[in-house]
Image 1 (cartoon, rainbow, N blue to C red):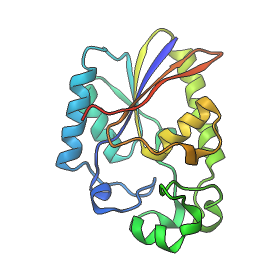
Image 2 (cartoon, rainbow, N blue to C red):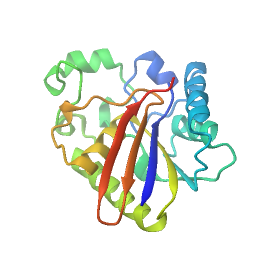
Image 3 (cartoon, rainbow, N blue to C red):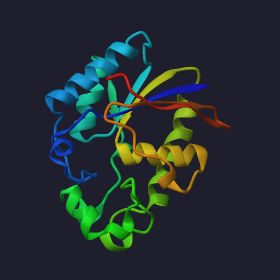
Image 4 (cartoon, rainbow, N blue to C red):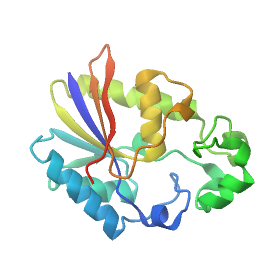
Length: 198
């Protein structure tokens, strides 16, 4: 069995500014974001991770470094944030207002926005995450693994594990929220979602 501790990066400069931040936007952590990552590090420090995987985007890389210290981090493009296409970098309030039909009352992104934004589809990201999980289950049997990624990508991980399809039933995890998943070559099990330590 492979145990994954999946952490959303700490607050970034774009998060603080209310900017929609997908795979094309690469801002560093704020002071608050660094503090959030340090709090997670304190909570997880006894786990002795065998391996660390992170999105190559700066906010995730910085979070992984704070939590894992000198443990070597492998940067995997499959963990990058969902690509919001032309919406990347725009103010969230403007996107929610201009494209209200693609968001629910909780401001969760609805399917088929890619037709307008020209970003990724939910299915594309879910499939790459399923492949990532299958690799980890084979390569890291009986090991604890730290994975640092992004809000919407982690939400799609839950789709990969649970097959929930209707993603509006799940809000994105908080900055530095921790999700725990167990993998075997035959199964994927969610143990908890968005545990907040900060």
